[in-house]
Image 1 (cartoon, rainbow, N blue to C red):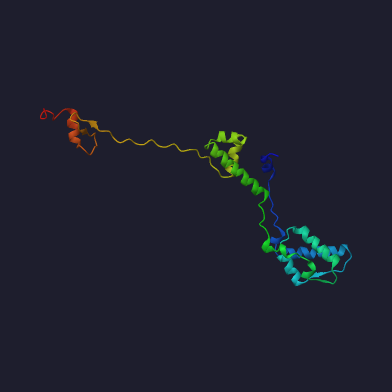
Image 2 (image 1 turned 45 degrees about the horizontal axis):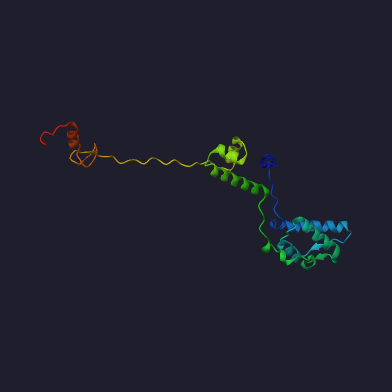
Amino acid sequence: MREDLYHRLAVVSLRLPPLRERGEDVVVLAEHFLARACAEYGRPAKTLASDARAALCDQAWPGNVRELSNVMERVALLTDGARVTAAMLGLSETTAVTAAPEEPPSLNDAVSRLERGRLVEALEKADGNLSRAAALLGIPRNTLRYRLRRHELRPEGKKKSRPRERAPVADPDPDGEAVGREGDPRRPPEAVELLHSGRGLGKAR
């Protein structure tokens, strides 16, 4: 499937938080599943003790809502008494919230990061030239412009170095001395004007 097809179809993205991030919702869902299981299997109604509620909130629930539903169904079938304690839940201590792994990024975020990285790489190889970058990516130039705007990227090519300014060159003097041009601090302007006009050379002769 082409990448641009996903972006055309992904109008609204919804993120459903995992069960371990939903706080007291775990207890509400557990009571719902427990009551439903008791009704379906014809078992007496059961309630959750305070320690069972705390244990449910401390659990990581890697299987999310489906795992919680299975636990409540097992409790309804295999336990006696009207009050369910933490020991009756049979939860594993290895899946506590403190040891829960970090949740991976969503598919939309992963695709966006991958696309941005490919755009930056193509721009660097093409030295900021949009036509060359579009050819490297195999997409039209207009599509490249659209994706650059979406990721807030701007093509930047190599900057041309400015030509270095040359220092003023002095005119040679017949006597071997450098004759400064106008504005040269080595000779006053009056002397430069006399030398170029020929005036003031009579005494030298």
